[in-house]
Length: 50
Image 1 (cartoon, helix red, strand yellow):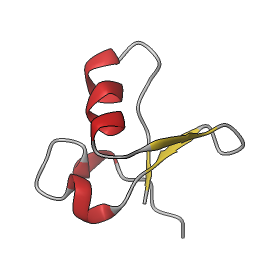
Image 2 (cartoon, rainbow, N blue to C red; image 1 turned 180 degrees about the vertical axis):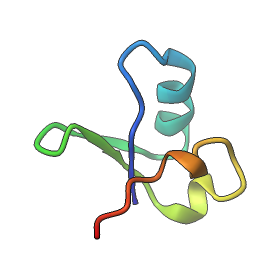
Image 3 (cartoon, rainbow, N blue to C red; image 1 turned 60 degrees about the horizontal axis):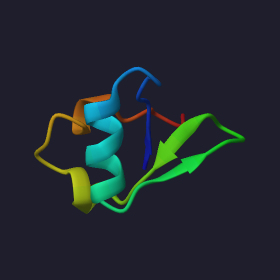
Image 4 (spheres, rainbow, N blue to C red; image 1 turned 90 degrees about the vertical axis):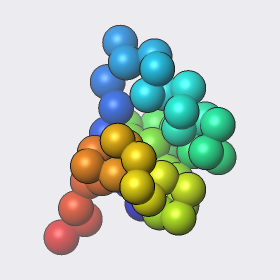
């Protein structure tokens, strides 16, 4: 899943890194498996690809 987190949101970035997330410089979004963030506050930050 692609997740949008701003640069100044260090807490969210740390949570994404802990969940195995990786920064995608081309899309300027974080890539993380849905199962890793399901049920967390990061779930509402998922970017719809459609």
